[in-house]
Image 1 (tube, rainbow, N blue to C red):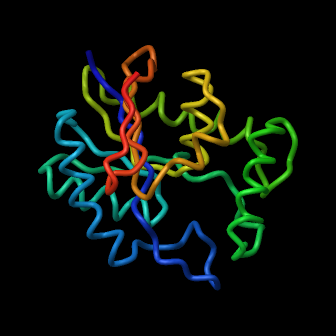
Image 2 (spheres, rainbow, N blue to C red; image 1 turned 180 degrees about the horizontal axis):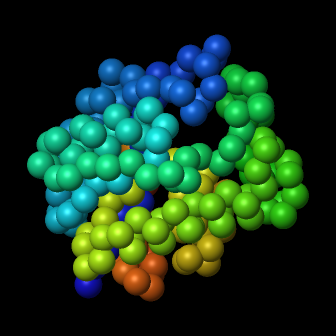
Length: 196
């Protein structure tokens, strides 16, 4: 059985003056990629594909190098589009806004994209990546909100609690082509893992 592994990028360096879509990994984030690569090796990935955002690209490049796997980027794997929202430094306020997004998927409540639109974009991008690599174990390094939208809908999970548990980095393993949820590794550093 082939697998799709969706990875939430490693820990970025937060730069309030830059949009989150431009953040790069922190030193800690780069170090955590080693443990991420060790955990992903178990799934024998054939290719590492990332969004175009620097923190995802860096995460994928480090993992691909450590595992000696091909690396590429793909369009439309980026995070829910909230570039028009300034830096939300208050964690509680940010979390409340994202929960609103999950709870009102058809309404524009945060950023310039509804949850439904972000899900459709991301799901189409994932399907394109999988179709480009038939018969392969594919690792896609992306972002917490769009990953949550995809996994919650595929597996029938409640989005907000799932999203809140995802660490930096974290990953989920899905079967191909059915997208059946096989495993969730909520925190690569803390080794929190749940098999279906």
